[in-house]
Amino acid sequence: MKKQTGFTLIELIVVIVILGILAATALPKFIDISTDAKIAVIKSVEGSMRAANGLIYAKAATAGALGAGPTNVSINGVNVSTVYGFAANLAALVLVMDINTTATGDFQIAGQAIQHRKARTVAQCQVTYAAATAVLTPTYTTVVTNC
View 1 (tube, rainbow, N blue to C red):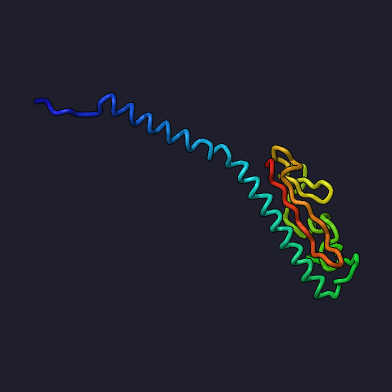
View 2 (view 1 turned 180 degrees about the vertical axis):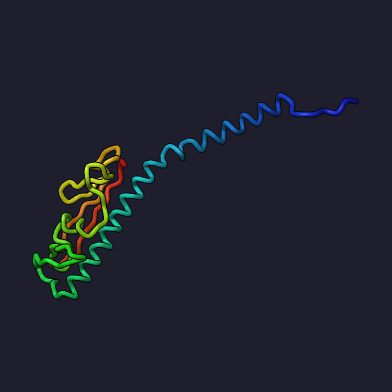
């Protein structure tokens, strides 16, 4: 009786089929990674906006500038326009944030929104800023439907 060595053709085909099934189920996850990354980046921009506005509010509170304004508050040598202690508009808020909105950066400013320049649809991958009012704190509206 001869002892069998190696794999039979059936065993090799079964292994190839199993690898094919694993590859087919894993492939969609790898395709969507860039979209997930852009969504995460836009959400982190919103967090950065909130943190920067918290810093602006703290500085305005210590300077006694919590009124209807607009009032300028100096942060690291930059004058930031405030209303009710928060950034008066997106341009004032961006002065405090470390974000690249130049032509070569990943972000652009459109009105009161920061948009991800490399998104599938730029207007559907953004954070919009609305300044504080007498009765409301600033609002941040994040749209990530087509990043």
